[in-house]
Image (cartoon, rainbow over all chains, first blue to last red; front, side, top):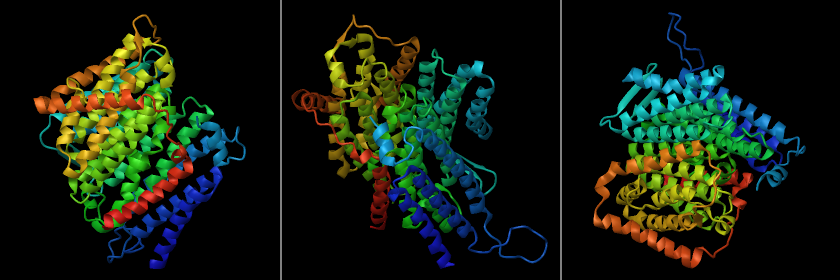
Length: 113
Length: 477
């Protein structure tokens, strides 16, 4: 399990460093998606610490079930993250008409006073 | 009370989407929503004991409504009302009013929630509504400014989410109260998110460009109330947990000083106001016990200033000094500038006295410096040449909106009338005199443009990681 946690944080960091180091807006957006995938995986990991089964009462013996609260929470976060990605991508699409390469420095130079 | 609170919090969302179906009624519906909030906020300010609601079982949504939330809700209602009056006569479509009301509703919910996940949802909805308002003109610049804002705030909120999960791991609950005993990493990560979202200290350097390049009513809305949604949870956590309090105060002092340095030097009216927001948010955080009243005063004054600045003939202060502006526009501008500098008879005075009283000894010198800096910056507006003959192209809605906000400044003055004693009155007057003297002798002639390099997109993200590292060390210490 600790190795899994390490991989999850590695994903988050890969995403964050991508946001810093990639020069292209499109790549930055993808890096942000990688980071948010890492965060989602971290919630799933937190939920699965004590068990992996769905918490359904079948009347049988008690089983180790996964904690449904973080899973429910992250579902909301996934939807929000998805809609923000969509909005940012629409923005990038509009910007690409004047700056087809989507280089962040070019965009910034053209659009800041 | 429970039913009223739930009805009040859901009303903006129901009305917001109905506006889109009933475009003819858009203005009336939007004003009705802000009036309901006004009444509700007023009632909460007067409340002595807080209400706590637990919705949907143990793991559901927790809400806490007390007089602190009341002040913030009242600010939100007044600012929204003023912005709606300002936009009344224009040809703005229903879409604009929908977004304003959704922003209003989500900011309200940020002011009453008591757990990290409800707060997360509220902050993200604020982000989306603000993005749509900023990018509404659909010019390339506005799209870039909005995109930059949404990108930075979403990245910060990802850190926040990791922190929230860590709080859950320790306490099996997302409640604010868990932050005190949560692991240090959790505190640091949650702070990164909230500081960035609230535009505090170096994490808030995204704010000047965003607020200065938006349209006038949008700037007023974002600067008057939008950023307070990020500041409010910091205040709430500082009041709930003693360990957090010094950290919040420290960031408050940092923000007040950083903002004021830029404000003093800036020659562009809207950028100056945006930097002043950074510094005033520092005042709000510097004394968490009395944050509510300061936030109310700042919300009123800053939205009034943004609306007025949008109706000046130029954004450049050098140009404004050449040609006199209309006296009837200068008058509210001067009143607002007096209030933000802390002049008696306006609520800025009471708020400043109250904040200064609740400072810890190590904060006093820095905050007084920031107060002098504020007086220097707003002397730029007070001493603008004006003329009764000069024409202004302001619309009737502008006068209604600014009238409401300025009247609010006079009325809110009554909240803390105990402030009126000789020592309390002399100190702000001396601060203002000192500020004006410094302005007349030195700063009027100084033409140093502060560098904008830190406001570049990549530096914003870089600064976020630096703040995260600094916070790790601070909470470990």
